[in-house]
Image 1 (tube, rainbow, N blue to C red):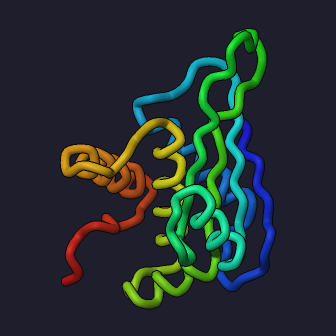
Image 2: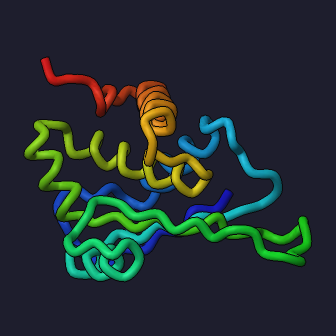
Length: 157
């Protein structure tokens, strides 16, 4: 699995390329939906203006958000020996930073959560219904726990 990382902004506390790659690879490996063959995932770290534009264009929602995932889907006729793209994860550095402060979470842990969350969306996980949300949140918590990060959905003490 190849994880290509693009930094389109500079912000405090953004993980380095190896950390980003490690979290995405860890999430995919522990998802229970490991794709067959060679594949790649793109991760782009952006500022508020870019994610706001994407959120408006693709979700018809005005405002910056923390993470967006864009699954690539199957490519008809692509030989099984070729690397296929699973999609892209776009994360807004300033929104992640601000959320971590508001939620009193370590910034590195919140970054890990957003990377895991985005990767799971590329693998077809969703949280639109209660049952789907429970499954996805439980899996996220398990993946994060395996690398020492507290459950992001647990109630604060």
